[in-house]
Length: 116
Image 1: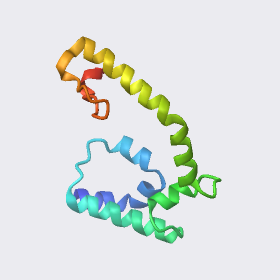
Image 2: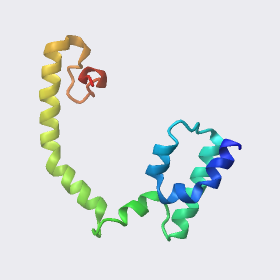
Image 3: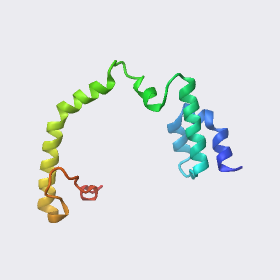
């Protein structure tokens, strides 16, 4: 059976349990046609449920009137700690790896320096 037909035949189960589908089909090759079928299926699913897209669907699960505002308010509270941690980690990594870590605190720290 063609891979895209196999995926399409399992679309109802896929849409009801995406995580389980991913676990069972880790080796499934996602070709452009399969990706199109999956995206179309998602669009149809969310539209039938009365949502514009997946983001609106996910946000509906929260009992908050202004989720975006709440998230921005939380970020404002956490951001100073985040920046301090970034500076501390950058300084410690610079001590160990030298010039591999940028001096500018606004630049991202290369992920490979963190290890596994």
